[in-house]
Structures are given as C-alpha cells and as structure tokens.
Length: 279
Image 1 (cartoon, helix red, strand yellow):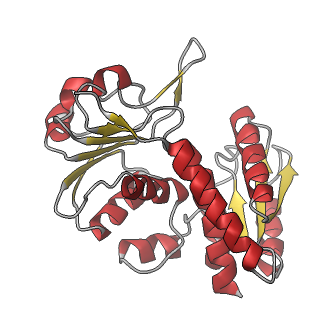
Image 2 (spheres, one colour; image 1 turned 180 degrees about the vertical axis):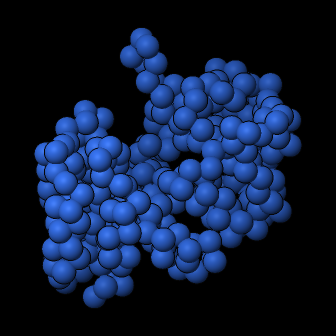
Image 3 (cartoon, helix red, strand yellow; image 1 turned 90 degrees about the vertical axis):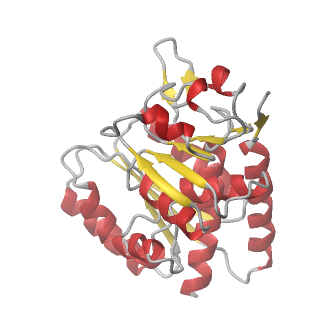
C-alpha cells in the first residue's frame, strides 16, 4: 500500500482564489493588521508571506513592526488603537512574543470580533460549545484538507497528538463537532503507539520530529502531519516519519506542502468572515 498524498498547496490555492473572488464582490476592502514584536527570523518570513497572500486576495493588509524591547503596556496601547479603528477587521499579534510580554494577556486584549487567530477566550469557549466562532487557522485548515480529500469522519476514531491551545485542543473540538470519537494524546500518554494504532485519523501536532513511526499507523488510516521541525542539517521534518508512514496510511499530508499553506489561506478567510460580521 502506498498512501495518497493530500496536497495542501493545491487546496490552499483554491481557497485563496475563492476568498479573492468573494472580496472582489464586496463594497469595501477587509482590513488586516499584523503586529510583529522583535525580529525573530521565522516570524519575519511568515509575516511577509501573510502580507503577500492578503494583498493577492484584495485584503488591505499592513504590518506594524515594534522593537523587541517594546513593553507590554505599549503593546496593549497599540492593540487598543486597532480595536477602535473601524478600518481594521482583523488583528493578529505574531507569536512568539518576547519573554517579558505575557502572550495570554495580549491575546485577551484583542477585540474578539477582530481575533482572526481565534485565540481569544470568547472564541475558544464558543468553539468548545459548538457555537459559531473565529476558529484557529491551522485546525480549520486541517478540517478543509480532510473535506477536500473526501475523508469520511462521522463515526470514526481520531487521535489528536498534542494538547496546545493553538492546534490540539481546538482540533479536538472541531472533530467532535464532526461526530468523531476523539482521543487526545500528550507527553504523559502511556502507550502512544497503541493509541495511534486504534485511530482511523491521526492529527500529529506534538512538535517532535518523526515521533510517529510507520508501524504505529493502522492500515489505511488518514494521517495529518501538523509538525514542522528544522533539523540540524537545515531540512524540515514533520512529527510523522513520512517515509515509513506512506507504506501504511491510506492518505497523508507531506511536510512541507501539507498543512502549512492552509494556515495562511484560513487566515484570509477568517479576515473576511470577521469583516462581514462586524459590518
């Protein structure tokens, strides 16, 4: 058996095109502001990609770059201005923040209606309750990949590997909403291999390169690899041992080119959703 490759680049390209078509019909331009504190290289590259994608979709996007020594109070003041600006529909504060700034405090400062990352407690709570919310972009992207690949979810068993508030927990909520029986695994899970073998769908978001081995995967299972880890030789690896897994899984996302492109595409969609709700 050789797994079918789920091409995130193609799915993201189609989603970005749909967003651009939608924006072109609106009597206004949705506004997105990204706040970048410091000069973390990975964050800088990622923010540039967001700017390009937003511009291509017709979204009025700009980035506010602040020095690493910016105080928490100054950042809160900046966010308050953006909350009050009627031209701004989406606010995204790029994480990670410098260590002297409490990320959760900053997230809670953002207007929930402009929280296009979906991290504000109000959006988190609404998602957990199965109510409409701005959903974190990566888990939203995973659901779109599963739908595009025609993976039947209802009644299946899924394992979400990782319990972060950015991916793992919202991912579990979305799968529960799709009538999936969900197990969450984490660093204290006693027999991770056994948990993986029970799953029809595995979403790996642990941040550990090649953690999930090929023989942990049930024949024909769907594997979504959210991990993106930089190795010592400069190459990228996911949380799944791809070369092993491809011989067991029925469908699998590659790294890179799987989940990653969907995150920015879903950010654009969230920005348009926020703009429509606000206006």
